[in-house]
Image (tube, rainbow, N blue to C red):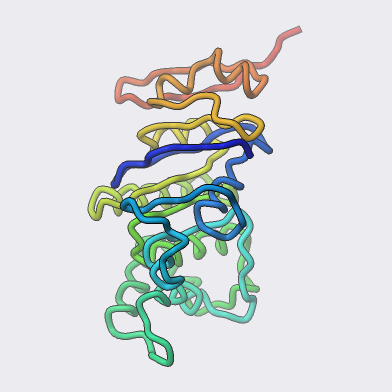
Length: 241
């Protein structure tokens, strides 16, 4: 993608939006350090790629759009992988690690899947466990790439509300790519609109989610409603013959 520069204040939530192929996933993969890229990702002023791998994992948790999960692992075992940055080599999870995993599983309503094998779960159930694993790291920075794409509306809200609560309680910093513009605006402080690998709009939710801007870069006709609580709702409009 083209050059990109943004400052994400600690404890804030930055939403990345844009049509398919805009560069959202590429940007998050670069920030997570899983693909080669030019430039630097700085955390507290220091380049992330110069830190030890375990330290990077403890600082940044990444939820990919299409994760690869081992079919023969149980849900609880998979979520426990999120504690790896805190467990030494040849060490076993401690009481605190198990308590953290149990808490995340409980808060995401995943108790029924804790002892089931991942290969026996649906796509939505597996996606919720991927989010749980990321939250179990207790990393202060969370990168989410379409984290709710396989979830129904109830589980979408449940997962995002948990992220929002952790952000409020612990100062979690979140950068998320989302297709659902209403959800993106509901949880983000600011939005960045990407188009063909370039940032074409950035700012408060109400400014970026305008009907004219969305028509220009998504090629759609929408109505934008501003609710009394500040929520911005984007509703597609049909072309009538």
